[in-house]
Length: 311
Image 1 (cartoon, rainbow, N blue to C red):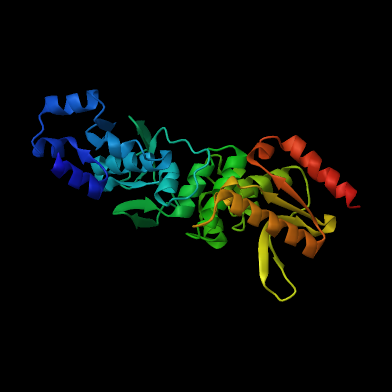
Image 2: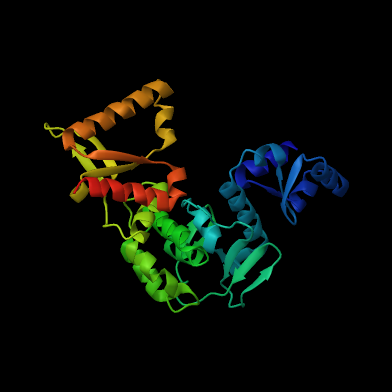
């Protein structure tokens, strides 16, 4: 078993053949899976259960993807949602049911088992190497995955890709121009036009989407509030100067504290920051939570009420 641990340390998983080479019998393999000591990633690929259980959903998908590519060989490149995971781009609402690859050998697209094989088309020409695996360029993967999502999730994915700094707007627009004639890709055009890199999280992208869909004026993002001496107090998520209104997403993680700082200390520091911003700007501050994003009508009503009060 020690030799298999060494294999997983390098590759993340081990194969049926590697288990046999390590001295396991077919019955040993079946027993280890049945007892829950090994987790079967897919046909012929396994991982130790104690290494599998702590992994997040996206990391599990990447491990399954690597195992699939090990079997499929040089005829494929990782793409679509699996490519998004390969580049560690925020994956909100992505479906990881299947592994996605694009054929490099001219074969047609089809679904075989847990793998969706996509036909290579115009625009799918550039590849990158990620941990020894060929993956389509990140802007291509993001567009390929986004077209299968609802508009809000698609917009958030585009912004997540831009925020990752692995491609810029020019790269995204160039990739979209190459792909736009494909089935359903046209629905992404307004989303590509709206997406930017200033949102600091999926929550901020969701907020920006909410404001746009409600017809609110475009908010300025990451506005820096400075003291008279020029030192920075902080950058706020969204601001409408015409309404003298700042809106911030209330990240609970803010209050977990820095090293040596308790949650109470962090909460106090955040309140102090907010008070200073209010004093320096004279603006009102509205905090939104994830729950507020799930209740768009109520949230927009609150913002509109505050905008009217500023008139």
